[in-house]
Image (cartoon, rainbow, N blue to C red):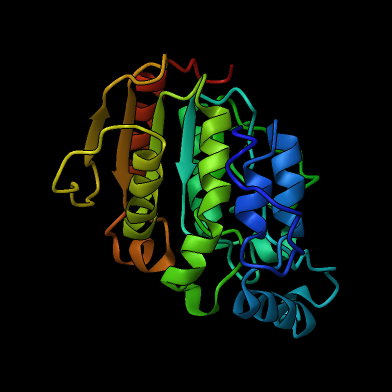
Length: 262
């Protein structure tokens, strides 16, 4: 990462400059994940994630909630990234792993397993044995937001984490799947800032939308695919079916050169 990107003494974890300062200095995903989990830069999100942990749902009253920012999940040499929205209040905010412990994650990991990119179809907690094959799952916002709606300011404050994560993945990264319009709209500026050429006007989000971004900085071309988010609103209404998501992820895996189960 660029050591000159953020100068000066380290800001405290509650400072809005904390993500930009530390993301620019992370030399690997393990270091990045550790710094992400320390972040307290967005007061509204900090208050909410901790309030949820203190006032647990009855079904989870015996859980010790994670109640911190949730890092990405998956191997450091992933050639496929899946970018969602943010952790769920009683999902990732509870379990400490992206898309783990909520209905959206159940839908996503079942599809990844069917394609051969996950070791099992379920994700219940960090020690459940789930492995991802060539896939890294992350989000533009790492804290659970009230009503699943981060503000533009919160998205922008969190953006350096996503930029650093994708930069660290870039030597192997070939395909990114953006889940939902929020993920798509948050992702494209990050890619533009990384030097990739985004068409103008910026392409609209849609399920099955596909961008081919030319090779740059010695890396191969990057494909960006859009998918409806596996929210209960979309899955219950049939806007997104399991077959639709499996088909899209199969296409993404082929583009990424992944061999299922490897």
